[in-house]
Length: 170
Image (cartoon, rainbow, N blue to C red; front, top):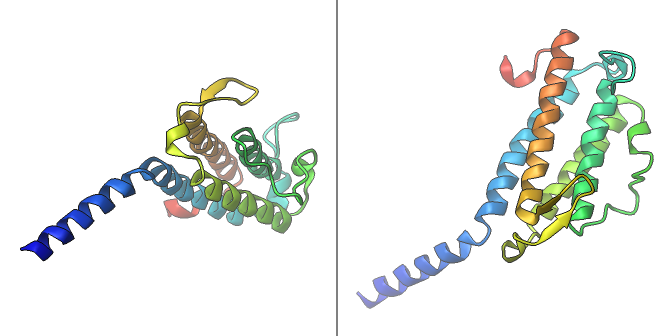
């Protein structure tokens, strides 16, 4: 009985400790899923379709994927995680070629997923100025998810306009 009590206490303490990161892990899981769909969509476009844009003055397909990558770095930087030294934020949306754009998108996805886990839950209420508004750190994590989802929808429309079926909808 004593061993059973010790095991039960260990499991209870482990469950309580595991709750500390439940928000970060939940957001990270949803963002990973969303990013996976965006990457699979990026892979489904032909290199030529990366230059397609729905109208003059609107981001092309490739520029839209790069916008997601740039926003990942920008949002993380506002939360205290500067981009890697080899990332040129001023020219990120000028990268050319499907393979280069895909590599940039994937690298930014990995970066932001790593940083989500480093946001301390005890600091969720701290205010952060993102430049477009002031939000707490928890809202900042949710902005990553919302921004990727917003542009996933945009890129689904781009895909359908170009005869590309989103791979997960087959």
